[in-house]
Length: 303
Image: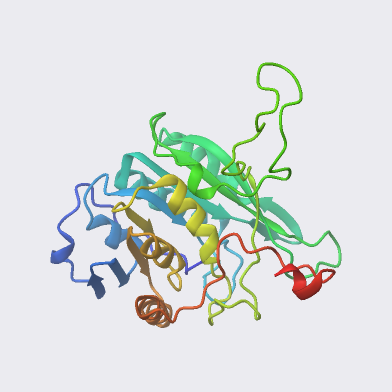
């Protein structure tokens, strides 16, 4: 979910009580969403509040939902947002920054390579560079069509929250057993499934996706669910500083976490609120975690 590039607001170090904010926001037992610039919104929050911060910032491509700027200015803005996110991050927390490529005169620059030194300068450690592969997108004519983006997973320390079991995927050979040695006859893999690895395949949210809204580049909820389940505990707070239409907040709420987000486009905030209301009433349509990718060569696409 990519919102517009935020303005260069001044950072506020300590954070004040959210209740004292003059920003328009909607508070509930599920968390807080606000129609607000992310810098003042974050400045109103206390240190070390969030176990997980997950977002997809704008790519500086000049799309309708962002304002194109010089690359140096773009990186300076990202640096300020990252610095404030690190202040808000719990000592055992994680930041997951999902990005694609910056394109200039048909030349691509991987944005995560530009942002890497900014995160390292904050003392964070890169745990994984996750490849998100999807099957559909724009077709290029002078280079190969792009079908992946990256999620950089950063932590503050070695003792970070991590749960593998909730995100395990089915083993390729679930009943495979050791054929020799002291464990002969025993299962050779974990009966709960295998580690999903650092290559994730989820459909991106296009016109036939059940979660599609007017936002042109929204997160699939199942992608955020995997991060929420593996990197937080029930009751933890999760934050998205470029909230878009609220997929991060929805994924957090679905799994008994508190979701926080801010977005400067009022229409997107209203859609996020409507989606949360639908989740609460049981009418929100999402693509379930673990659902196979549609395969036209199989009956019913393998579903």
